[in-house]
Amino acid sequence: MGLAKSSNRQIQGVGASPGIAIGRVRITDRSRVAVHEEYLKPGEVQGEVARFIEALDQAREELVAVRDQLSEEHGPEHLYVIETHLMMLQDSMFKRETLALIESEAINAEWALKRTVLKFRDFFAAIEDDYLRERVGDIEIVGERVLRKLVGKQHEPLNDVHSMSLVVAHDLSPADILQIDRQKIIGFVTDLGGKTSHSAILARSLEIPAVVGLERITSEALDGEHMIIDGSAGIVIINPDEETFREYLKRKLHHEYIERELAKLRDLPAITTDGCRISLKGNVEFIEEIPSLTGHGAEGIGLYRTEMLFFNRDDLPGEEEQFAHYSAVVKEVAPLPVTIRTLDVGGDKFVPDLNLDDELNPALGLRAIRLSLRKPETFRPQLRAILRASALGKVRIFFPMISGVAEIRAAKRLLEEAKLELLAEGVPFDEHIEIGIMIEIPSAVIIADLLAQEVDFFSVGTNDLIQYSLAIDRTNEHLANLYEPLHPAVLRSLKMVVDAAHAAGIDACMCGEMAGESQYLPILLGLGFDELSMNAISIPRVKEILRRCSRGEAEQLVKKALTYHTAEEIDRFLKSEITAHYADSFD
Image 1 (cartoon, rainbow, N blue to C red):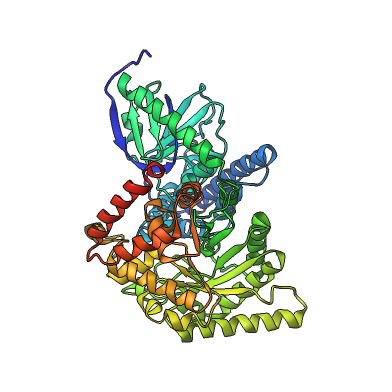
Image 2: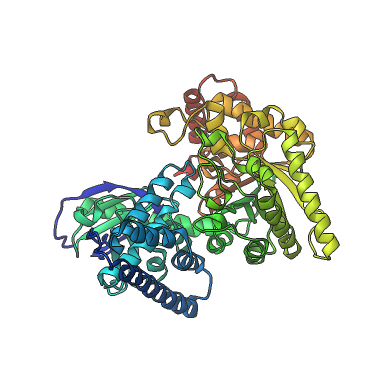
């Protein structure tokens, strides 16, 4: 194959989009702009303000041109991210903060902009939620676009490459990803980024193999070198030797074969060998994720997160704006159902108009349903907007972080008030909309039998349930080994929740990360869950394994698992069972 080098350098990053791509490196200049820091002389401030606003306008015009071009070529399917970036350029704290720094401290626009971006980065870094923490990437991308205008640096075209190219960049914006010519570019890797960045989400949606968070890949790789991207394992290999090349070529063909086989399952029911039907749905944050969701055979949306509507803006979204957004989601996924979660933010999340005080421990503070009930002026417009959207398709609503019966009753009272208002106004909605709650804290588990009498379904958020049950901060790297989904306390909690739900005749659903990790499927099946909601890519694999399982055998597996005393023992037992019964599915 004539390799230029045989160093076989392997670098571990974050697998952003699965699949294997083999091609040649194309370094793309997306490096950060170096910022010159300068204090202004008297009389220069207004000129600097004008220069910053002009750069904002130029960046906006450039992004509008990209949006219009993409809209003509592909339709509006994936343009919500670009619209979000346009909103940040048009009217946001991002703009206000930068102007305030220029005027109050008499510093040049580049320096002020850099400080604004750093301020937001520090704030987002403290956020616990993975999805929300990575939203800082959007601010950095927008800030970089404006910086380039300020220093007169051009945005290098991404598609000026040969076929079979693998783009290597410091970072790529969602607009970059959307403009990729799939005939030429077959994968990309970046220094920055995480699994839930907008760029990673789009890469998965467009099924482009990608690895991000490699830190130094732009300094490790050279233009024209051979490279392998393993988006599933998060591995990049530069200048592979002959043996490695052949091995990954074999893996690539195997992966493509498996994907083709899994794709055949898309329209088949998720049903076990003994006739037990499980609903497999998807977790969605952005409307642009829906085509990938339905393409992977999801039976609807099991968790639609509404937080992003509230971030990166000066004011709160009103009822009309929320209704427009929710109705677009409902129409996009119709006739499949959508389960919408009400606002799940708190003192650790970035919604400035809520005027939240700093809290010593925001994870246990005024957040989620507690915040919504404290601020009905914010909660009521959301309830009305969701109810109105329910007239356009099948919608369920559920409330996060319920800790007791009083909270769910208070939330239901506000929902009933919203229904009465809409009835009086003659506004259509689903009068029988199903109501659920997230089970994610120990008190909800302990009184699950009481809560089950109040709602139509449970949805377990495993990330928080594990964290709160084990008193583990899952963002604390020193405690990562103690975050154990198979801990006996977690399994017993899940069993209590499912048993309480079924005793009351309601569904037990799961929308946490555990639902999409196929190695846990026999446990979740045996516990009796009725619905699992996960990221789109996990659905075919989970369905394939599910169709090879028996609910009866899974129940016996769970009975045995619950007799072990530690997570390690349960994990060892589960692996032995998987090896014995489902080995082919877990390749």
